[in-house]
Length: 596
Image 1 (cartoon, helix red, strand yellow):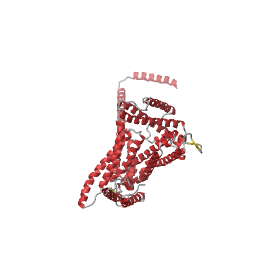
Image 2 (image 1 turned 90 degrees about the horizontal axis):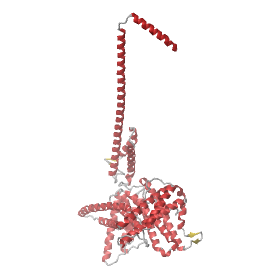
Image 3 (image 1 turned 135 degrees about the vertical axis):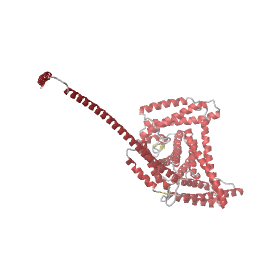
Image 4 (image 1 turned 30 degrees about the horizontal axis):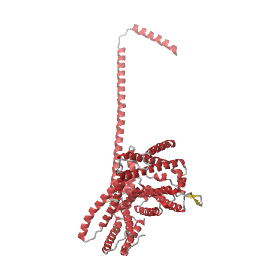
């Protein structure tokens, strides 16, 4: 706990009151958080920060050395986080204060990437894009602040938005400097080592592919054991969350084994390229060569760890047995050879951290599924605070127990356990970051309407994608739903308790898009029916054409036969010929009767 100087104590108490007001506001689930409430607390907070800044300047003028940071700074950081999440909850995601929570998470993620030394440009590129977006928001906010300051100056009012700009700029600069530092490792890779780097990245991606596919098939069998053992999750199970499971063809165990053997050979070939000191030789300067070798060795170690995890996953059906190697106990009383009681204390501390992190990770993953219906963005503050405490505890343990206090036989085991804890921390922060970035610029009071409109839109697009409607009646449920949501508007706006919450533009755009899709589906149905009618008409015409021709041919034949018959009767035959013909016919008929 940081000490509070006497000259800061009154302001510290004010900050505590602001913190309590924010806590009661975010914990009250019976009422929606309104932007008016948030702005009131925010203005009070900025005024207190302005007083704190003036007080410290006065103390410096008196010649007093400030011992920063103090407890006021830590409390200020917590208030900033809560206020930022309140802005996001109200749908004010494009306003400068809402970006503070994102900047805080980004800084943590970059710090963890720097610690683990295993990352690619694919990990850094989304962060760079997000920082560029935040910079635009801050610049737009500063421009609007200048206009507001001029107007308030004319009215004799005070403006404390300078504190907001300074703090956000400082936070952004720290993130950007750390990002540039991480990217510089890639820029300094010599050209003759780039093929090795590319091969290692490709192998790492393929191993992650195999790892995630294998973990999917074994998740059902391991769920029971994982619930009873706090350390029953393997490195492979943890690392499969690093990237989403890729869509690839499933491999049989024999095929997977062949692929693993092939990748092992490639890694062995890359390892043989190193010199006796473990560095990759290059024509680049020594300093550049050292930096690139650190990066390449990190990727190489990562690939070997993944290979080991896949091999263990294939050979060990019970996942809880995989962490027995991390235990230093030998039976109930003694320790393994080379282990000490100090090792046991360190392991126990790490196990406690692991259990806390794994529990937080599971809750955050559940929120990723149910966030649209159950999550209020201010709830993320509790997770961030818990992670911050775990982070401080982890650093204290690392600083407290150096390698010389750990027996040499257990150094590698503790490094692996610490790597898992570091990964879990990074994973939890990345989940919070995803939850923050997935927030829509819609107030929580309008979130139910937004969810319904999004669902209707998705259903209509699915209908359109699967060859449209077959009957107009299929649109009735969607028409009724859209009509009921449209009736909630008054003068084109959605009101909640007499106020107009944020997100009107997005909801109106969604509603208009749904009506447009409805209209398009109706037009497609009409065109489809017209095409069917045209096809039926063509079939009828073809059938009619065939009948007329047959009738014409039949009439012609009848007329021809009739004319022949008339001509036959009108012929001038004598009697003799008639009798001879009659006798011939009678003989023919008599002979023909022999067949009966």
